[in-house]
Image (cartoon, rainbow, N blue to C red; front, side, top):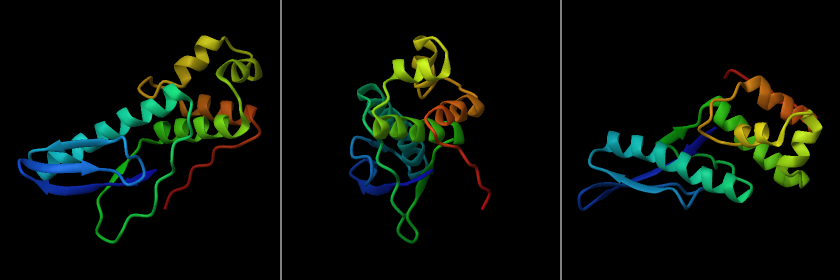
Amino acid sequence: MRYPVNIEPAESGFFVSFPDIPEALTQGETFAEALAMGKDALETALEFYFEDERAVPLPSKPEPGQSVVDLSPSLWAKVLLLNEMVAQHVRPVDLARKLSIRPQEVTRLMRLRHPTKIDTISSALNAMGKSLELFVH
């Protein structure tokens, strides 16, 4: 759930890009601001994948010393859910049927910025024959 981020000096501050999510581009005046703006740009770019119902590229391993942007566990679980839906060719209406809920509830579930309980996302994955496991490292 950690995406490597490139933060490079620019004419006025720092330029931010993500090797795995090329749509996520931004800048900030300071390194710290650039990193914070990067998190927002990453989440915004991920919304495009959800809107288009396209699989989200998984994060690559960061290079030594490379900064990373962490996704929240619930946001990461939503990414995994979307990717599984794409892999299994499950449309939101199909998932709603599997869960015995209204399609509008799946629409809310698939909104990145909508707060969703991790148990709800886990139930959706279970309905597709998958399980969500959390680990502490």
